[in-house]
Image (cartoon, rainbow, N blue to C red; front, side):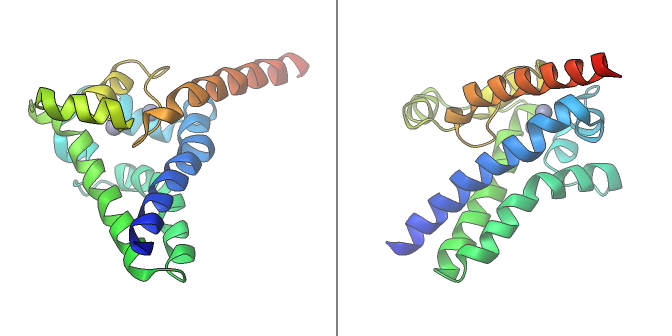
Length: 164
Ligand SMILES: [Zn+2]
Ligand SMILES: [Zn+2]
């Protein structure tokens, strides 16, 4: 029981930190994520960080860093929970990019994920197509606050440029 709670906590907090500290700020101030994850048409191995390419690996590692750090902290409470959380997180990275393989989520699973607020490949693909929507790598819940954070950081960037 404790392991399940810790695994969920890792995924929830990891997604929160990764979205707000790395993913959204990258879309405003960075280039790495845009050039690796959003430019052109790439294959599954590219998006799922299964290809040995330094830029792709770096973007993947930076996005995964909050999960790994949380894993280290939460492992002191439940090593199994931290391990399960990290494994599910990695499996979700692969699963949410299966759209690039032409896979489709069965309607029943799509329905279940919608109810539970879990990001499906189809939903994540909307983010690949349009970078202003579809935030939250695992939980749909982070999409709206993520979009708000994006607007706010863009405003900040414009305001800062206005001062210079
Ligand atoms: Zn992606
Ligand atoms: Zn993105």
